[in-house]
Length: 131
Image (cartoon, rainbow, N blue to C red):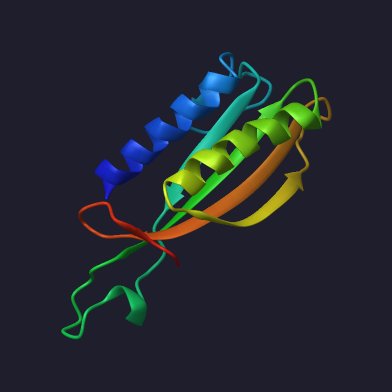
């Protein structure tokens, strides 16, 4: 699965930095006081399998995949929102569906932060299906 998450991460980074060349796109934690903003944090989670991810013999055919992203802006909510919009469009082209979108309070009141989650199922070849 790491190969697919790396490919998807790189595609999201490419699409976001086309619109926001100064945006740092990372999978590592962002400390808003130390980081160069704007920034986008993208992380992958792989929740447990269920009956829809296995074949009749119990072999896992699909991996449930969740992508969590947070955008950070030192200037405006508008910029943070547009960074997530760019990520949203890229992930939609990869077959992911957004399941939530929220404003997140940051420890630093001058930082605007938004978060979203996308979901999909991927098989070994990288084929994407709705989850």
